[in-house]
Length: 321
Image (tube, rainbow, N blue to C red; front, side):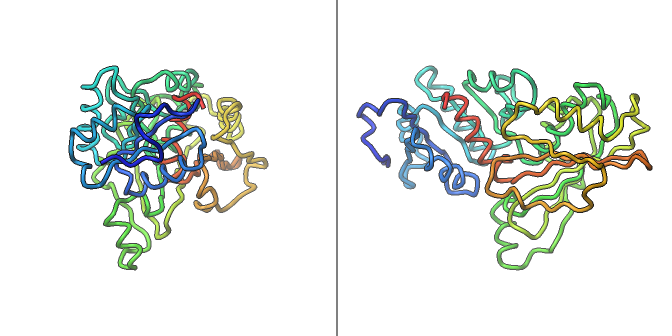
């Protein structure tokens, strides 16, 4: 029933953490397992596929691990979370990579760079929700500028984003890999994308933004962009002011980097794939002093800082690695 590299009843080596990835056959789960395999402090515990839906078998696994990482559809994630909560102090700490708990009470949002104190909150949390890939980019751009007063909380904001198809689920991945999917698609045109609630909850905005996601015919990599008319902002900032505000916020961050844009028109094109395979997020501000316009841009791997990498980053904080 159980599959682990050591006897579950033996005493683990010093500083070794036992981790169970619930739902490790999907894209996010597989990449989490790959990342965990490179950490000597981690022992991965699995369950035989024949017992994955056996509540008793899953409870037995959960009772013997330090942390569980959920990579499941929302309904299944809620079931697993409820099972762990029913175990009380005997249950492991929990990281959920689904959308099920990102705005739920009692859960800590797993974006350590978002605001001061967020990293400390993750370190001590029992339950952490991993941010979505699109919200990671949008919140990284907006929250520091809203908190600094450079963008009013009620400012009308449009968020444009393009992602590789690997974040789109099994059927979309299969369509692209078989060559039957279109080269590019806009979606979420019903204004009800599942990532909007967390963008609203954590961006600092009080006005619901317009969010326009899209899928490109490449595997992974993401660009999130937010255009701004600078003269419509009350403080009438320059693009350089926006960049300075972002740079000040992320000065001590290891995974989020603000890339210098001086002179402000020093780049004219930006591709989404250069951070693939990393857990980094890069921020840029493209601006025109002549036309008083700017675009905030976040680049990340939608499977790195936007999914698996973010889950492992939260785990490392929670376990003190």
